[in-house]
Structure formats: structure tokens, C-alpha cells
Amino acid sequence: MDIPGEKLVIRLWETLAEKGIGSLLTPWQTLREGRARIEVRRQELLMLAQAERDAADLRAGRKQLSPDGTQALAAPASVLQDACFRIEPVLDFGSVANAGATIAALESARGEINRSKAVLFAEEELVRDPQEPAERKVDEDWLHSWQENAGRVSAEDLQRLWGSVLAGEVKCPGKYSLRTLDFLRTISKEEADLFSTLARYVISGRVMKGPSAYLEARGIDVSLLLRMQNLGLLSGVESIGLSTIFKTSIEGRFRTVFVSHNKALIAEHEEAAKRLELEVYLLTDVGKQVLDLGKFAADIEYLQLVGRSIAQQGFTVRLADWIPVSEVEGRFVNPQPIDHGGATSEA
Image 1 (cartoon, helix red, strand yellow):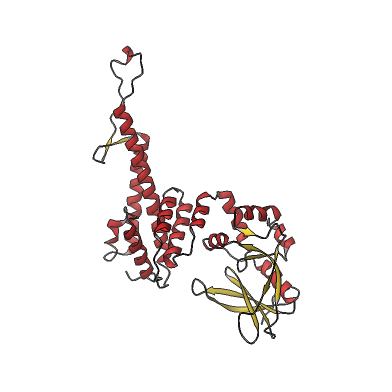
Image 2 (cartoon, rainbow, N blue to C red; image 1 turned 30 degrees about the vertical axis):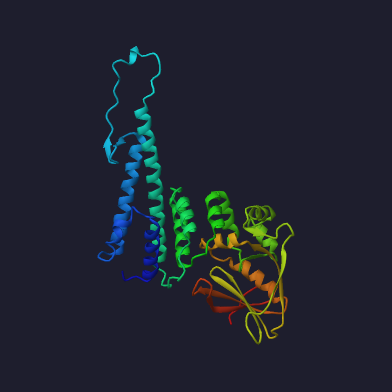
């Protein structure tokens, strides 16, 4: 493999092989060195699609599961000749046992297919990432929980979500807690959509209370905030926000960078001892981890309003593009000043 994320992809498959996960895909991994990755992936997807069709045939009764595990076309239904002479019901234990074995096989196959698809989505994400693998390995209990949860979902968007979770954990073991996995297992689509609405307005793990009218006009009202708090994603709503004091992140002068997805606000002051105070709602640890799984674009107008409130405290504020360079670091480029009226102007 000659791909940007080669080392991470290798770590992924080493982790899965060690724990016996992704057995449907294992035979294809030996071909990856000799074939183009895109061709191998196409073959894997075709194989999984055929497995799904076979499972559907078994479920519908078009095929039967033989004792040796193979499948055969079901015999056409026939009427028993002595059916009209029977009055008492008859329980065919052989049929019950066969039906039970078929159901168990179908559930096992369904889980393996779902997990395999999530694994392919994880590989798709890692293959573009040149980051070096961490020395620490994925925790066995974590991987077992992931295996169970990923096996339950058949919708592609959820399989992609669990693939992202696996990819993130392979890159940085310990990134997603077991509590976060349990939360993702139980969250509804409606709740996920509500969190996505809130996510655009998260800045460095916080929702700034300042532009409250602007937030309410976009559906971020108290009822939504309380619901997010009840889900364990947000805190500080019952106290109508928390006051956070920010100090400088560098020596010699004040500078603090607030990151919101693809944008950043840079607050600066000549006095290093200067303190910046803002009223905020805080994302919980689970909330931060769930936020990290999505791809959101910052609301520029909202950032300008927040920047204006910071500038009114005597700080110089700039709005810039944010480029991540690792899991915990990044750099800002193309900074533009924000004046006290909230508008940006050319530097």
C-alpha cells in the first residue's frame, strides 16, 4: 500500500485481527498488497451485498439453512395428504429447531455484515490521514463494546458513524469513552438532529451566551438547551449559564484562541495579566466527544457577534480560518480584524 494513511490502516487491521473482528473481510486483506485498494474495496462491498441478499432469502423462506451451514432453495410448499384427518395440533420439534438455528444464523450474519461495513468506513477515513499511530493500543473492553453496538445498526449513516468512532479510537486510543459509546447506542435521530443544530455554535467546547437573541432566532432556545443538558451533553443551563474567565495562553502578552470548527477567534491584549470573562454553557466530556464525530461549519455571523462582545472588553479581536494539524493542535491563517460594531475589515 502506498497511501497517506498506510500506517493507520495497518494498525486498524492489526487491531481487528487481534480481537477477531471483521472476519468476513479477513480473506481480502491478503490481496491489498497486490491490488489497487479501490478494487479490493469494490470486491468487499460486492461480497457484503451478496451476504445481505442471502440473509434476506433465508428470512423470507426462499432458501433454507442446511445442517452443514450451506444454503439451498426451499422446497415448494405442499399440502400433507393426511391434513384433513388431523384434529389435534402437532408440534414439529425438528422444524422448531431448524427455525431457531436459522434465526440465530441470521442474527449472527446481520451483526457481522453491519460490523464489516462500519470497518470499511473506518478504513475509508483513516486512508486519508497521514498521522502516525499512537503507541497505546485500543482497549479490549472498548473494542468489545464497539463490536456489539456496530453490529446492531443497518442504516448506512449509522454504520458510517460507528466507522468514524473506530477510526478515531485507532488514531488516539482513549478518545471515546465507554459512556460515549453507550450514549451513541441510545440516541434517537431527532436528538441527533437537535445536537447538530447546536453544534454549529460551539466555540472551544462552549456555547457563548452573549448573542442569545441571535441563537434563539435559530432554534437554540432554553428548551433545546435543557434537552441537551438532560441528555448529558451540556451543563450550566439551570443556572442560566456559567461565567468563565480566560487567561493568556502565551507569555509576555495576552492571547487566547477560540476555535469553532473551521474558524477561530483570536483575542489579544498588550497586558498579559488581562482577563477575559464570558458567560457560557459548557459541553460535557460526552458532548465534546460526540461533537468531534460530526463535520460542521461555523456560523460566521455568530462568531462576529461573539468577537464584538470580546472587543467591547478592550481586546483586539480577529477572525481567522482554522487548520488542524493534529488531534489537539492547529494554526490560524488569514486573520481579519473585528471592530466594536461586529463587522470584519481588511487587515
